[in-house]
Length: 198
Figure (cartoon, rainbow, N blue to C red):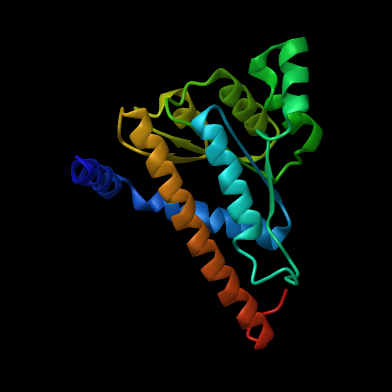
């Protein structure tokens, strides 16, 4: 049974479009070069993925604690008092949108994670981001839902099994982090060798 599950994961992984994943890597590197913020959000398992992605991108791409320039990553799923204050007073559907209203600037990035692609608070935050000139990325499963049609860059896991979608999202996190770190190191080494400048 374990082998069967892993075979299904492998099947879905092979069916994914590589192009958007590589574009996500480039978008993160551009944000790094320009000093832009990257905001992550989602619900349930996707909230955990948002936190994980944020932590790995912010820390896992560093050469060590003395590293200079860093990726500015923020997870909007982690401030429980903030989330519950907005949810209690205005409704759960605004908990990510309203945090973006406080923190985001034009040119920043959002990464919205939703297995179904139809979580209302994720959609509202993405709509806010689109209207305020942020670069929107969506990670979905199922048929992509409404989120897949809203974002500027869509990372789609072609499965209707929520657990499988969330599992592949986590695999994508580690794949993307590895690529971003590798290319950051290449750029930093090139600068140190005088090949290119800031």
